[in-house]
Amino acid sequence: MGSSAVIALLAAAIVAGTSILYAALGELITERSGILNLGVEGMMLVGAVLGFIFTSNTGNHWYGLLAAMVGGALMALIHAFISITLRGNQVVSGLALTMFGTGISGFLGKSYQGMPIVDPFRPVVIPFLGDIPVLGPIFFRHDVLVYISLLLAFVLWYILFRTHWGLSIRAVGENPAAADAVGINVSRVRYLCTILGGILAGLGGAYISLAYAPSWQENMTAGRGWIAVALVIFALWNPLRGILGSYLFGGIEALTFRLQTAGISISSFFLAMLPYLLTILVLVLVTIRLRQEAGAPAALGVAYDREER
Image (cartoon, helix red, strand yellow):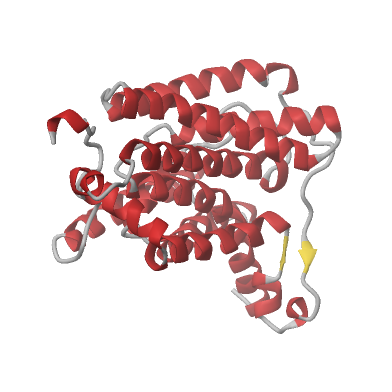
């Protein structure tokens, strides 16, 4: 493989990993507050279909992006109400949300199946930076949503580990009773983080239908929501590590496409399986690693009731 092919592959890895990065950042901030959301796949599908529908009908991809964010937020609000207010089982709620999102997205997008997008996001070359040899084509010739995802990762890292807000979020995820005792509103923090997670998952879905593969196809997220959930563990709940993990998974996906187009005699089913095989491998390795390092928030998945503290 020549240097130009490697550069093209790395650039494609960033594009393929961006939707996963958005979803993973959303799940990460949600889990940091102690809420486990397994409905990421469903929220991404709702974001993808709403983004496509609103863009098709308005001719403006920013309206589509806003619709995707609202759709993801509403889906997350359902999960937050069940998990925080009703103190229901978070795993069951998340799985139900995925099934609901799969069904409603298929229903809403039925008449748009296979249609091309009117106004997709297109690559924007950053002046000067885009002309840097090697680095320019890899990092600085993408659409604006790629740049926003990277900026968000750094912003979330700063908020979580360098601000009072981040300390409150981490405190709620580790010990909600202690956080409540010092005056932090546990329910409010968890609601805000869960809804923010839904907004980012909706963005991840919209990125697929408005930029990565500008069209609408039923179930077009193809399991990326589940990869995002696994990626949070791989990143050890750190947004900056999430960047690396997203692009690693994106690189595997981009590589499978290139192997297929190159005519290499490998089963297409095996190639399609590679990203998910990597997900399982990563989970095994990271689970072993978690025994030696700080792992998940201690109160992850545990409902909090003030009357019981």
